[in-house]
Amino acid sequence: MDNKTAAAAVEAVLFACGDPVTISRLSDILELEVEEVSLIADMLAQSYKKRGSGLRLLRLGDNLQMCTHEDFAAFVRAALVLRRNTPLSQAALECLAVIAYNQPVTKAFVEQVRGVDCSGVVNSLAEKELVEERGRLDAPGRPLLYGTTANFLRCFGLTALEDLPKVDLPNEEIPQQEEMVFEVDD
Image (cartoon, rainbow, N blue to C red):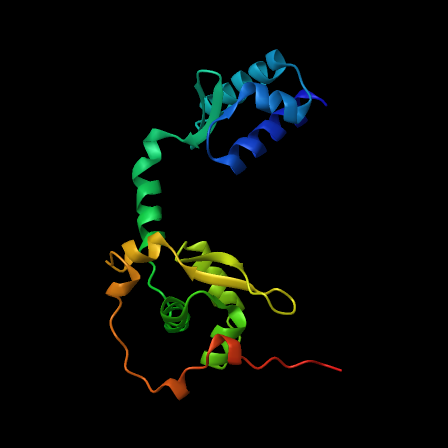
């Protein structure tokens, strides 16, 4: 592997990981000597510095980590605040309520309650760490079960699921997990 490719690989791994990675781990991944990886890291750090990049390569003992340059911290902070404060859509709130009150539930259960496909919404809630996989249902296809997270409790100012507001709905309006209807194509 030439130096340019190796440098790009180090950059890609550090960017994807986000957390510090040991030089020896990078050496194993790239199948290069530790000294080569160390020299490539120095070269990358100098390249970022020379061109005034918004990125930096930090050396933390035997670890390397890619981070943003401190001169751009205010911009990064503003972008992260905007992302964190993005309100949930009505569909996301509805899916979250169905999951929170009935967990653990399958995506099919959420879809049956709402009457529409919820794949994208459930995935978005998982990305926001408001719901998580809680295992699989012992049924054909072994569908994933979803439940809320500690982040859900934190975001909604709850200490436990028991703090959720009580909802008075007749039982016949809410399908039960075991009563779900599965359509099978012949």
